[in-house]
Image (cartoon, rainbow, N blue to C red; front, side, top):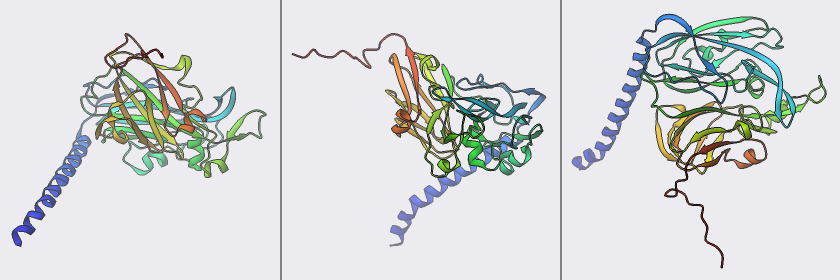
Length: 348
């Protein structure tokens, strides 16, 4: 009886040991990152607008970096020549892509444009500290704030404005991504792109005829007029399609600003070879569709084997075909009949 009980305990003991080991590894990794020394004079970080991303980190040492962001309230086209009042980081939706490595010391300078009506700030999910930096960065119109943080966790993280009312600021487009690469960088791929999904709730403005603005009632009901990639209907269609060649490996950095909906991201006709689940360090393979929560992100990688146009969607398909969450990847090159042959037999 005692022996049998001990046998039953072995799996529990083994599991406990594994969990303890993994926990210790994570803690040690974070502690090591805190101790990494960022050398040299601060440099202004390269940041880019979607769908472009800054060049890979590679094997460079930790640095001191400066990230300059400006919050603005501007008019832009949301769909079909319809103007909308967007709130932005650096005049784009999504905001600029920020790329750093673990151990970097990053100073964020946030300036709120003098023409803004409301205060703005930034909550970076990559920040370990109160509010992700939001209280430290609260900026009235025409004012500028600054704070510094150390990147101690690798992964792909959302940032967004967290000024009240938070859903309104996010719903107007105030979100973006920051990538914290591991020491030595991510594995090399051929193409990288930046995509962010957001849900938009609109009504006619009382200020200007034809202009649309945020509708709080629709947002509370979680009933968006648009669900969009990169802040505009058709942002990844036609001349704006992202591109690759047969044989190339593509890496997509995908975020979901929300403020409300979860994304079921899928590329029609492709299988994701690798998915960095929720933007972290756990990799899953051979995935058809990956979930991205509001305020979350994911990294997907796949090799392009067959030429053609591949449709990117939120697989909650009414959002794709009726509300705008759709784009395309154009793959050019020689046909690969071993993988796909479109020839059909003639009917008798």
